[in-house]
Amino acid sequence: MMNNQGRPTAPEAAPSRASKKTFTTNRALQIEEGLIFELGRADVAGVDIGEPAPFDHRLGGLLREEPIGLPGLSEPEAMRHYVRLSQKNHSIDANMYPLGSCTMKHNPRINEAMARLPGFADIHPLQPQSTVRGALELIDVLAHWLMEITGTHAVAMSPKAGAHGELCGMMAIRAAIDARGEAATRKIVLAPDSAHGTNPATAAMTGFSVRSIATGADGVVSAQAARAALGPDVAAIMLTNPNTCGLFERGIVEIADAVHAAGAYFYCDGANLNALMGKTRPGDLGVDAMHINLHKTFSTPHGGGGPGAGPVVFSERLAPFAPVPFVAKDGGLLRLVEHAEGKNLGRMSAFHGQMGMFVRALSFMMSHGGDGLKQASEDAVLNANYARAGLADVMTQPFGDRVCMHEVLFDDKWLEGRASRRWISPRRSSTRASTR
Ligand SMILES: *Cc1c(COP(=O)(O)O)cnc(C)c1O
Image (cartoon, rainbow, N blue to C red; front, side, top):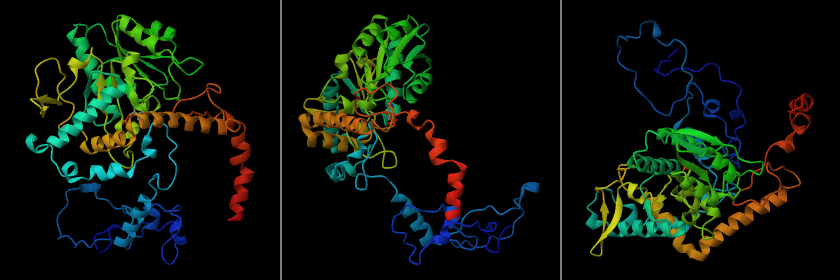
């Protein structure tokens, strides 16, 4: 039913949490915020839209007869609702961040100050290159440090996130396989069953089929299991180290050797680089391509807080297939190469990458220095093990009480038998209901 302002009327309002509103509408702790459907009323609107002139609709029998049920709020009510929701965004100012791969738990203010410098913040990707040499230099310096930290030969800066970087790396592997004339035979990508979901998804998107490798009882992939899955039909393996269970893949060098001996490539998911930085270099372990989540290892807020950036580093083997654009030096002047002859796979995105993320990542690196980055890795591992040891008598770990890397994984065994008894028994819930 439409009311006389042309707005739909809602059915009778359900008893809502909104009824607990205080006089000032301030609820101190922003914990109990009702849904907008609970807060809204049918007779209020934030905007006044005039009644449309009469017209003949062509909806036949499809004309809506029931109210559409949209919540009505005044403008300040709507604004305050969304501001209160925004205050639920988790930040280091409010609490600790318990997620291992994401250094978003520490986003130094200096990153933000640097990213807001007008020479970085107020430029446009279509601006003449002669006017943005400083930005090109920043991309070049960051690229240098990414290759230095990972022990690799080339880097593609343009991918926009980890998953996009995976796509870039796997496209390079595909281009390399094509160039060898083996596209028809090498159709399989190996991925352990502990892999992040983006790994098999990326392999499928690049036209490969996924063969899963079972992780052992110790939570890691054995070289033996990898060898058994390898064959002349395999194009690549996608492995994360440390893996998503927070465990170091001890067989990685042996696995890399076996992969190369079988004529395949080694893609490493580098999302967990913040456990390795300054300690070991993926290039030395035999990795051919790896994305780096700048928004994880090198700070910068993401998820609810901002965009990401997923540069991909390449071994010598895959470097010729890296995409454009890249920064090159001509007679001492930096220049963005947007078209190049050769085997490069083309471009991954319209422009050059996430400039704001580049500034933040380089700012993080330079304010830490080499020794500071190494310590960040050591602290990440120490902190995760502190949590592991502190909770060892309460919770259970799926692969035994092993020392972990940057994150610790607990399973739900410790809840067995407790759930029904302690939390959701009918007696308990009825007790709660009666005290209300
Ligand atoms: C976060 C993550 C990804 C994906 O990265 P996005 O930047 O979120 O696209 C891939 N693999 C692992 C192991 C991750 O932790």
